[in-house]
Length: 189
Image 1: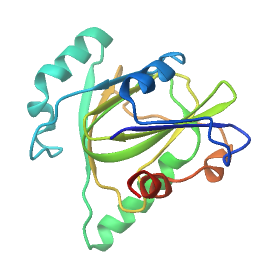
Image 2: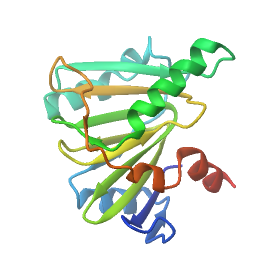
Image 3: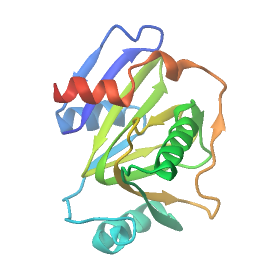
């Protein structure tokens, strides 16, 4: 179940909002131009078949939002040096606060990840799980944490052929807030 946690940007120990109510999450995020939606889950989704399994939903997003590049990304835990290296590399890349010149739309077909939006003097931690579509508007300061053992399939949407391009802020704010692993432990615990 999706979890939204909101903190003051300068006080990660003070929780202003904590909710799993999808309507409340959508309303809270909409104030900042962030779209949140839920899609029905499909079984046995991989990066290779995700676009096919979600064809109707993907086509609807392409049509309404004008995306020209759509792909699927998968991280599946494995007891290999290659997986561990990839997990560390990807996690570190996305953990630094950044913006994009494009919207960042992600649908979680499997697994989970946390988008942290830094807007209006607050940090909005959106723990997305399977079934969640989140659209972060262009130029919104944010970061993403997939945890120390990433396990997800996500569908990614882009308005140009460049794909994911981050404009890093140089801020260390991401190091001050609870991580994916901490949020997930508190959410499940």
